[in-house]
Image (cartoon, rainbow, N blue to C red; front, top):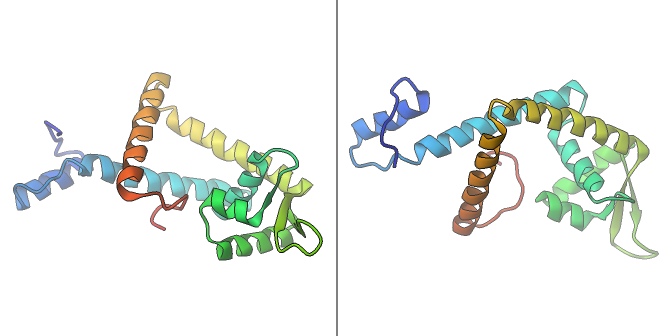
Length: 180
């Protein structure tokens, strides 16, 4: 329970307004959830801008990153990609088609007559994902630097606990974009 609200803080003002208009309404979650939504929107938009500046998008980063993180030979089945990204098979198919047309990945059957499709990161895909990861993660490191290393550790642990609790309460729909 929050003991004191700052009426000059935009989020606290929302909680205060609900308390005034509907006494007894539970408003303590507003300070956490609303701020998390605001952070997610700001960070999502910033990531889109960073990626757009180098001609990429979040879907491309997601696909190339999951392949790159898999280790050499940077190859996964389409099913593994869908599971690791939390994206539907149809969406993966569209992403793969775009990435393949751009020369970033190659698709091939797992074996003769197999319906299993292997997706492999190409040299161009590897080069692009390295650039994207440097840009995105470097930017995110600068953004979180408003907090001390100790504060970053505390926030990481609190968010880990909060996420675990949310998954216990709400289930885990898999990875998705904010609001998707």
